[in-house]
Every structure is written in structure tokens, then in C-alpha cells.
Image (cartoon, rainbow, N blue to C red):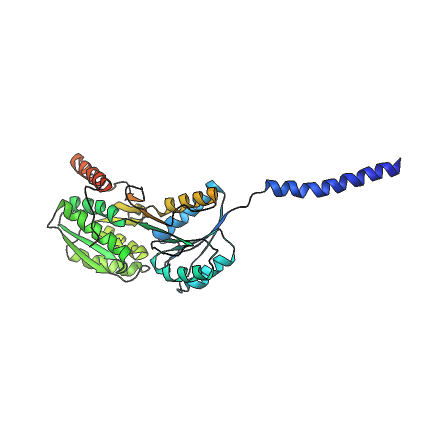
Length: 325
């Protein structure tokens, strides 16, 4: 009898030992992971990088993904990208126009890896591109600036003289002149996205030239400009993210570039279908890729509010074309 019981237990243990791992393996789904290389200034810029990071945090919390990130303040983008590739992520993101050449080089060397380039366009098959119509959102911000300027002089600060920043500048200028064709716009190029003190100095110079609304498209350099505007008691416009918290007595609104939503939505598509449906995305007002943050500090009249909303609808319909030259 004891031999029969022992044999029964042995068979039971063997069957259990064989079947349990298969059940666990069948029930366990692969957890998707994403790696991101942030642009030059890294986390804490209150703008571009922080917005993308928020998108991944949301994807982690709502979709259950894993993610890792790299910063490359020394400019060694290729090494950082390759580290992310070596980790085996389902998608590797390169953030910013300055990463385009490095990400294309690494993508050629790793043809089976999926990449995403934000703020640039690549023809490589394994790189999906996302660009934004910054000029459309900046047009609306330029309208607000011109509506509220008392000196009829505005200031614009570029982080660099490159196409993506030129879109901010041209849209802002066209929107301002849509309200007041004779308005003056003082312009400076910082050639730096990470120096808040430089931004402060440029803004102070523009204020001395009569500017009473400062709009910097310059990353962390722009933070210094916005803070200088607050110190001088004038208005300013934030960029990429809602930057009201940086200077709550100055930031009338911000041209929000919804990088966080774009990253989240593309991540959701990837984990749902295991692929990305388009090679390139261009997101403007129509696609809800750009827009204005809530109006604060100032109050728009009913007529101004109506004018702003009508312009937005006309840009979406094509009745207003924001030119890029």
C-alpha cells in the first residue's frame, strides 16, 4: 500500500512540475519597454524634455510600460542611443532636431530596432518621425501679445537659427501683425538652449528697446527670459509646456506643443498593434498637436476672445495660411 501511495505522489509531483511553468508562461504577457534620449538640456527644463517625460510617465501609469532614459550633456548622442538599443527596448526615442544625425547613424547600424525621432523628419524605414506645426500655435500667441502690448513692441528670442525655431518666430510675427500690421518685433538669437542667465540678459536688453511682451523659444534659456519679464513687470509667453508656474505674474499664456500626448498616443498604438501605422506625423491645431495654455494674468475682452477663436478655426479650415517664409 505504501508503495502505491508513493508512486501516486511521484506521478502527481512530476505532472505538477511539468504543467505549472507552462501555465505561468501562457498567462504572462511581455511588458513593453521604451528608451528615450533627451535633448541637450535634459530633465528640468520646464519645457520640451519635461513634456516628453510626462508622456512616458503617463504611459507607464496607464498602459503598464517600462521606460528608461538617457541624458547626454556632453553631446555624445550616439553612445547613449546605442546603450538604449542594447537594452532591448521595443522603441527608442530621440528627442530634438540635434539628435537627427546620430539617431540615423545608429538606426542604420540596427535595422531591426524601431526608432522615433521627435522634431525632425527621417526617410529611414525604421525611424518614425513626429514634427509639429509650431507656427500655427505661435500665430495665436502672437495675436494675444499684440492685443495686450501697450508699447506696440514685442520681443522674440531664438534658441538657435534652425527651421523648428524659425517656425515659432514666423508664426508669432504673423499673428502679431494680424492684429496690428505696424507692430515692431525685436529679435535675438541666443545660440543656447541651456543658459537661463543668458536668456535673462537678452530679455533685459529687449525690454530696454521697448518690448513689453517677451516670447522665447529657447528651452531653459527662455526660462531666464520669462523671469526677467516678470521682474520688469511686463508680460511673456511660455513655450512647449504651460510655463505659468515659472512666472505667475508674467506668463499670459503658453504655446503648448503637446509632445506628452504624442508620445503617449504613439506608445499606446505600439503596444496595442505591435506596430506604428504611419512613417511620419505632422501635428498642428487640427490634430490638437499644438495650442494655447489657459489665458492668465490678463483678461481678454469678448471681442478679443472671439477674434482669437475665429483665427484658430480659420487656420484649421485653411482660410488662414501661416506662411513659413
